[in-house]
Image (cartoon, one colour):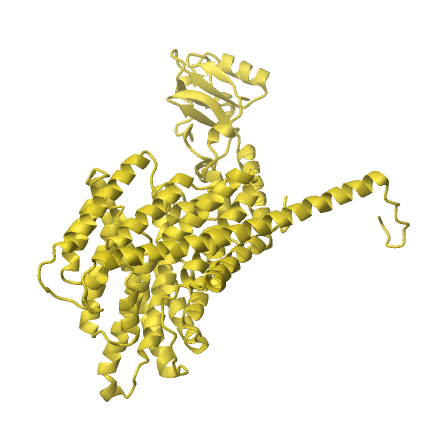
Length: 592
């Protein structure tokens, strides 16, 4: 239609029927998305409450009484060795049963969200939550927040299989499950929505907004209004409006938290490498971690479990700075051991504990200096700022943690003040280390998300899928005259030489032959340092390797045998296609 005033073509009966069919399909899609979000929200809310209740009951059955923040030797207590070690042995048996699979972790969920078929192992996901409840209930110094996110992703995988969802809807379900888990675990629906997009999906496509938001809101409303059991990890507190001195000190805390986050992430990564190189039997690893918890708990019993009561004591300023420093050291060591030896839940709880301790230490030191400086810090504000800064740096989720801080504290003045702490901590940790604690885990699996979704797609494309059979092979004993004749017949300027056993011997180019004697042998005239790809290489590696390549094609070898060549045009056409698909995935609001 060239003009808005041209007559409109009347809709035929067939066209009307087609339009109605499209409308009904979109309506079914919308109802399906809504139902998926609602169901996942309800199920995850139940699971979160049951899991937290189970951990609380298990810890109450055996954990000796102690004051929050208590440190030092207070006598030998065999129960501190017995329960964690026996639980570790039980978890070891669970891991043997699961072999060769491994329990699913949050890094696996992030990876799955960027796969063409975004699902996690359902069995591995459910076993991961069971293992985490057993470990934390027996004193593991980690938390349930990460395992609940894994549960949400596993439920999404079950939903995909049950309803035969397309990959696009499977990714929506995965995001919805993640959002519901955070919402139910923290009673923070807004943080759940942003966490799913910022940490796991890593895009803000509008079509994902409905299922993710519905799942998060449903989990929050159902756990609080229906079950009347909102999970609360922080006391509601009042704080003064932050002044210039508060902002300056919070900026300093951001620097400290950023450096501490880098140190903790590197410590955990190096400890993991050392213990992996030790090649300990998988069934023994959780038991050794449990035994280690027993030793550490004799000197710092507050490190056992998530430590929410200790965090509350920190916010009230009830723990001295020296005791907090000791707790921090013990918590970091204990968390590293648990996270490495399969005696663990998630990293979120240790990050909150360590950050709270940093904030408490700084507030305590400033309080000691108050008679000289005249500045009296708000301890609860510093503890909340430290928690937020450490969690955001280790999770790579500054926006989600800002909302989480507000929803946990219900204190707008405090949240606006600690934004500077979160921003500085994230900037520092991301520049000195990685975006989050999950990046090294993904890199260890050969997955690099730092360049975006298209990079991962190229990493997963083997060069053998892009090969061409349009190439000329000649025997290594061919002469210049014979080679030029064959290359003229094939209309090509390159040929590949094969030896008597069929192995690739080199590549010759026409411009290297034109000034040579006709009876000269081609083998000595082959290209000196030809670019070669192996069959196991991927498209991303090939793209990098061929950046400065000039020629017809790059040979692809498998065990020394030529299996094809890669044309530069084919490689970069595929790269453009992947980039276009990734952009449409992140920005196209239509559901297909």
